Image 1 (spheres, rainbow, N blue to C red):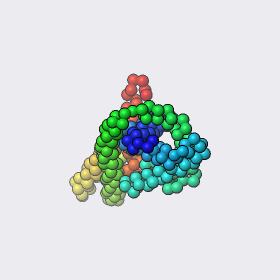
Image 2 (tube, one colour; image 1 turned 90 degrees about the vertical axis):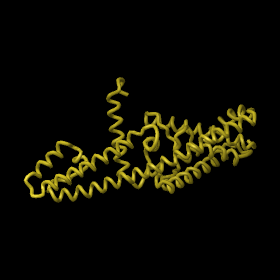
Image 3 (tube, one colour; image 1 turned 180 degrees about the vertical axis):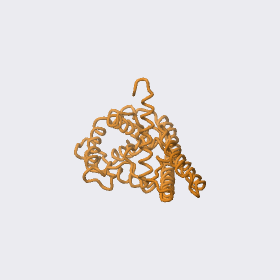
Image 4 (cartoon, rainbow, N blue to C red; image 1 turned 90 degrees about the horizontal axis):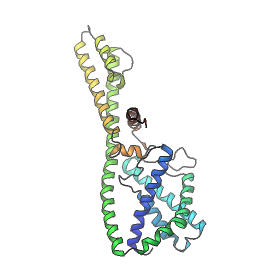
Length: 295
C-alpha cells in the first residue's frame, strides 16, 4: 500500500465500514436504525485514520497475530482518546462516555473497548483487508485519484456542515439553559408574591391551572399587574416549550440527529439536554401510537 492515492481510498472504505459497524451495533443495542457518526454522511473518519495508520505501522508484521492485536489496540485507543478530547475542547461535550466502565480515562477510553479494538484489528487486518486489497490494487490509478477527489470534496462539505451543527447544538443547549434559569427565577419570585406552591414551567403550560391562579388574584389591589406578570411568565414558558420541540423534532438532520447519534453524550448543559431527551421520547411515543402497525 505504497501508493498515496490508494491509501486515501482505503481511508474512505474503512471510514464507511466503520460507520456500518457503528450503525449495526446501535441497531442491536437500541433496536433502531440510527446514524451513529459525527458526520451527516455514512462515514466515521476515525476508523479510516485508524486502519490506514495501522496498516502503515505494521508493515511486514501483518501476519503476526500478537503484533496486530497489541499495535491495533494501542493505536485505536490513542485515536479515540485524542479524538474525544479534541471534540470536547472544541464543543465542550463528551460525545461518547465510558465513565460507567472500569478503568476509564476521562470517559474517553476504557480497557473493555481497547480490547475490542485489538480483536477488531486482527479480524480486519488478517481477514478482511486481503480480500479488499485484491480488487483495489487492480484499479487504474486515474480512477482511484478521481474517486479520492470526489469523496474528499464530499467529506470537506460534510465536515463543515457537521461542525456547524455541533456548534449550533452547543448554542441551543446554552440558550435553553438560560431560558429555563430565567423562567425559574421569575417563577420563584412570583410564587413568593402570590403565596402559592412552587410554580414550574409545566404549571404555567397547564391552561386549567393557569386560569385557576389568575382567578385567585381577583380582588387584590395589584391584581391587574399580577395578571400581566403571570401571563408574561406563561408566554416565556410557551417559548421555552416551542424551542425544545423545534430541536427535539429534528430527528434525521441537524442538532436533533446528533442527539440520537450520541445517546450518552455529556455536556455542561445537563438540564437542557435532559429536557430535550425527555421531550424527544414523548414525541416519538406519540408518533408510534398513531402508526398502523404500532412500530
